[in-house]
Length: 556
Image (cartoon, rainbow, N blue to C red; front, side):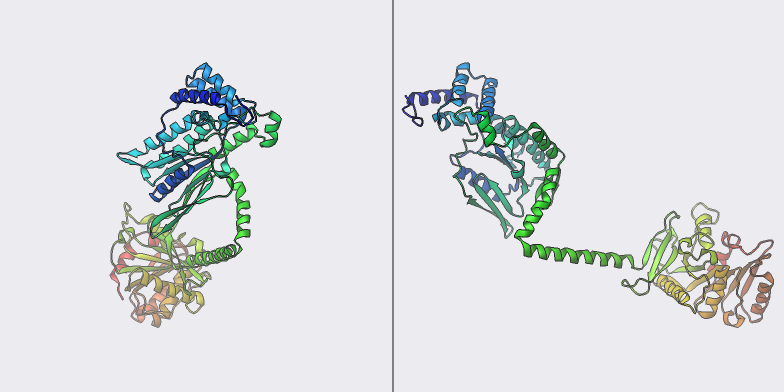
């Protein structure tokens, strides 16, 4: 008989042992490593981490209590086939109105805990079994009082199992009536070190000399209870008002929101595994603020480094954007490139655009290659019009595999003068020569086979550059030139002049007079007059191979 509220009745205790023995038949055998003391289990987990089981998933739970626990235990016993008498005995023990029932620490408590968590234990055993390959097991699991621990090594073929194990554990805990504390749930990789928190303990993992070392430290507060006390069984059914005042109210809507945020969470992995979910992102600013307050020096250094990195990124981007070189020309056949030349080096901002055509069949050849330099007319002085008319248009439409003219056998450089005058004495004219020298060096051009041609104001530029640099050109081909050179200054360079009979911009009679003077000084000159044509004769000149065959015969 009980003489006081806290006195144990031997007969009642004996009955509890008998019921516990019978209920033990309904508990599946536990193949998981449970030790008599919580410290031994923590030590087993620590050794597992040092052995390479560094991917950790720890779910901290609030154990079910009171009426919720009683209902879950009785439902599980009925499902597992316990007799009505045993269920009645358990129900009476759970709703005992005494101040503290001896069954709370008696032999029945661990059995009821195992019954309630049988689903969780079964899931953990399934995880361990699924991770087994031959004689090796790649997972370790344990159930503690307020936590479920799942450890995996870094076996790449079992990444899917680790992800699925986390969902299985959460579902099993929900079925057992345990409420996972999301804020305390840990999903991390300890391969580079870190901290793992277990009930009453802190596991500190460090990497020294390429090996992991784990140390345990007892946390403050009450001493942790035994592992078998995995569920807190109240001695009495609590009063709803008392229960409401003691525990925060949990509406089903909040529980649904928690599951939803975990479902839409995005798992990421770097040094540690993290699950980015909406509530995690919402708490991130608070966590950052608290960290900055606690580590002001580190935060200041981090801000300085971030600012330096941002400045370095801007400088590197600017420098890279100003480098000389070429990119593939959009909406053009293969071989066309848009280039820029920075004469001041990567730190300069004075960029000179140009166009380039390299025949695709030249790839892989060592060279040196012949080069045709084309000077555009007044209407194409905009850099965006490098390929819109003249020689580049003819190459794109009249030459190539499958065309009547066949392959184009020259590298072609399309210079740009934003003024449109092509005056060698101006800065634009000098920049054009620098671009030419850059291309000759970059693309293995034969300096003895560089040919100069142009139309309209570009034709005038042909004569001006022939006068300014008489030793650079193997041959000249001005079209509709509006400039008359000094015959004595260009006589050493072969020239083929093209002109329209009805040209009103540059009258044909001026060109006829120039041809006569060039021949008088001994210049190798040819003249083609297009009957009925006006100032524009680019397509008549460049759309066939005749001029380029003549170029190929010339060499300086």
